[in-house]
Length: 339
Ligand SMILES: NC(=O)C1=CN([C@@H]2O[C@H](COP(=O)(O)OP(=O)(O)OC[C@H]3O[C@@H](n4cnc5c(N)ncnc54)[C@H](OP(=O)(O)O)[C@@H]3O)[C@@H](O)[C@H]2O)C=CC1
Ligand SMILES: CC(=O)N[C@@H](CCC(=O)OP(=O)(O)O)C(=O)O
Image 1 (tube, rainbow, N blue to C red):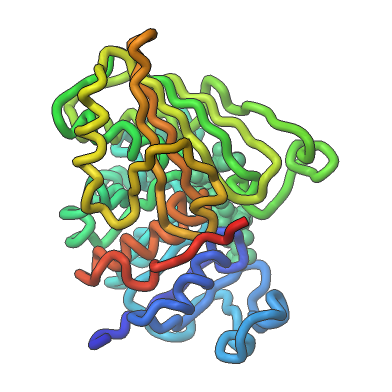
Image 2: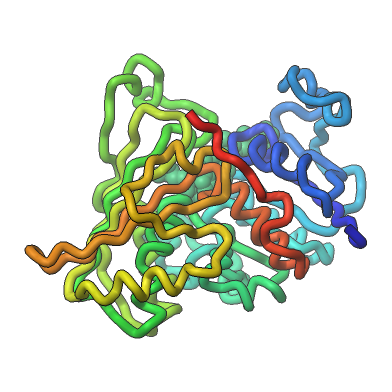
């Protein structure tokens, strides 16, 4: 590698932060300059993760970066990212924000779904949605990339091939299951082990913030508004996500379009058998299984991703590769943790 990029991770002890640390430590183009942690500043990484290799064990966590860096990854709650992004941009840093604070172009959606008025609407306009399979060209020149939500990643990859070719479904239904790590590290009663194990439940049925996120991306792509019906569910596995998208008004010919769209994409593979979440655990892959049911006239696409992988941290690395003009696969040739 000719160029070494100095990166800083904020919120490194959370789930996406720790996964990012794993991936960045394997990346040949990166030097981890600072690791910022609000709750563990002063400690060594090895105090928290005793199995780390020597090269990382003694690295100190800091409450603010002590070394200069080129690019920041924000693995933080939405509100914390929201207020940190403008400061980092002003300092001349590139930013990949894993939170939802800059994903939606409409400030009204933030009031309705996040509960606050967005204080930096001009940056909502500037932020590039970090789904490289769709927005690769814009990501290359971005200084602020809004890394997508996990459900939108899996759902939009299922919807995109049709919309790219000008087909607009009569209706779209998105049903999804997620592993518990999707909810982040701090727990709540419903995710507490005795209640979560042997259990599964839907949540935020009519009000999940990923609904406007998906609708907004579809609008950006097609100029048309779709009212998408989305139901997320959580199931007792630590990582993994499976999304089923149902679309009305398509026909069998779209299966071929689907295959063609992803034929040269390194991280989306169209499969002939229904995929499992364990096929992608620990990787940046999305497996997509499109089927057309002639009996009902419904086109159905099932996708699986790792919510902490393509749904968050490895997608952030793919975005970094794209911003740097590197091969998108750099540092991401990962085998699944199977079984
Ligand atoms: N989990 C997932 O599957 C996905 C998560 N995301 C998004 O990525 C971001 C990070 O998620 P995730 O890693 O799962 O979340 P976690 O709750 O696991 O981690 C968030 C981390 O942010 C840091 N932090 C800094 N300030 C605060 C604060 N005021 N309150 C709480 N935490 C703070 C903490 O780390 P420290 O103490 O080290 O600073 C904390 O551990 C979120 O915005 C989430 O919505 C996006 C896609 C998927
Ligand atoms: C199981 C679970 O709780 N999942 C999270 C989604 C995680 C994600 O993609 O996050 P953000 O949009 O918050 O960044 C949720 O539904 O809130």
